[in-house]
Length: 105
Image 1 (spheres, helix red, strand yellow):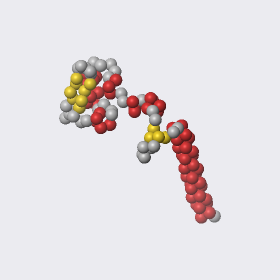
Image 2 (cartoon, helix red, strand yellow):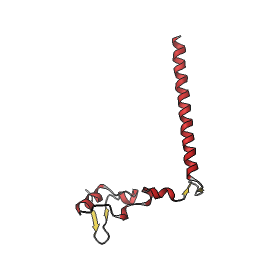
Image 3 (cartoon, helix red, strand yellow):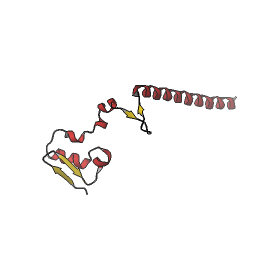
Image 4 (cartoon, one colour):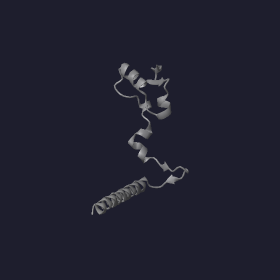
C-alpha cells in the first residue's frame, strides 16, 4: 500500500513508491489521485522535457562527455549499421539453406 500526498497549491503529488523521482514518470497511484481530484490533464510539472519531442533539439553528449555534433549523422550511421546486419543475417541464412540442399543431393 502506498501513500500519495497531493499539494493543492501547485497540483503536485508525491507517492511513497518514488517512481516519479526514479524514472520521471508519474506512477499509477499519482495518476489515480489526479483523476479523483477531477483534473482533466496532467499538470505541467509532471511532463519532463526528456519525454517530449523537444528533447531531440537539445545537445547530445557521449559517455565521455563529448558533444555529439550532429544527431542526424548518428541516425544515418545507425540505419546503415542496421542494414548491414540485415545483409549479414540474410547471407548466413542462405549459407545454411545451401548446406541443407547439398546434403540432400
